[in-house]
Image (cartoon, rainbow, N blue to C red):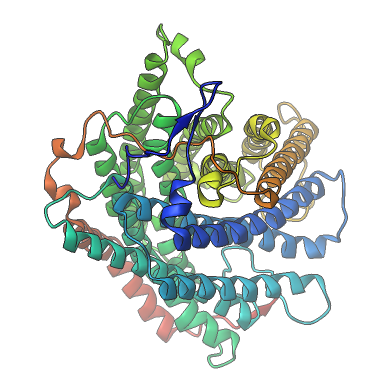
Length: 576
């Protein structure tokens, strides 16, 4: 890997802390600037969306209602879009730029990188302004939630903004692949460095999965919102969304996997257990992430039960890369703990650097993702899904995955990465040390109560916590106890978010240090790429197989839906 073990400027202070110049910033100033720009937008979206989340938790539980229930859906849309689409996409663009650049030792095109960042930013501003206008009487709104299902109709600027965000991410992927092509021309016989491999495989999966939502937005929703076509088929557009909608979960998770596989073992004092296993996992996610979207549509009429069954089966196959990840990552951090003197079957856990927020946050995020995996298996099962699909169980699961596995990992690794891209020592280190644990406790309380409330039948996506004329008397634990947990958990999450933003802001505003106490090297894996077949690096083969699997899973049903949609009258818009 680029400059992996060569830092002649490294020194060691009197207290034994390794220090170095900000090697990435000095070597790649443009790329570091692009990473900072992406992180700035990502964390701004995180702050606004997180504030909306606090208001939602307090509104739904009845403890604080600052807005009328009619505006709750504007707030809910802002929370979902800003966190699930804007925060994630910009943070991923930033960390992928860092990872690919350092792994390949290749610089990006300044013009192209500013183009994709600018395109994404313009799209974000268009969508965000349209959503926030819903709080006013301007007549402009987009209270369609993050899934933006027709026939609810948003202002055209919302759909144009969403399209620009996706197009910008496509250009970013092209920027990364062009850098890879330059590297390959210089290294025709070399194995792709692991972090670069992870970035490129995730980008291929993103290209494939976003085709569905791109067709939905550009072909149907933008013309529909402009009045060029009068009606759309809600089932067809909903299916096109979920063609993308489950794969986007892995677009969020795979950057967290990049951290868990390549940085977390280093923070634990060791190294990755197996490079080949990591490559196999990313290949499996490319193959299996997209042909599963119908499992979000088990309750939708008009889709054959056979296609839903295929989606369920494909979803269960996704357990394999997740289980491989659990084994490999735990083995890697155990190796690090034992290198530091840890002993015993579980005693080695005490030797891990729990006071390092980059480690503790990433490790706790992985632990929380394991819990999310168990609730995810319930969601994937066709018959059990019917019981929980439209209940608070689903947001409870969602907050374990993107809300913690991704978000907490992103915050935690920023503590480690920010000094390398700014040349500044991390400020408020005591606050940073505590922050991941506050988030973990808050999410444990809130998600636990959400799952239990879902089993009791409490609905999701509603401003009120229950349906009219429905009583939850006799529920074990009582609805009141669950509401208290949700309110306390949501408040703790916002406190943790404020702590994170305080650390990042203080660091950003501080002066540059001559040396930083963060070593950015990534040690080689115990089992390197030479122990795996070279075909794992042939991205054309795996992308071709992924396309075939998508055609098998989605070709016939989408063809049938499209045929029906063109002949059927469809639905007129419902303004929101």
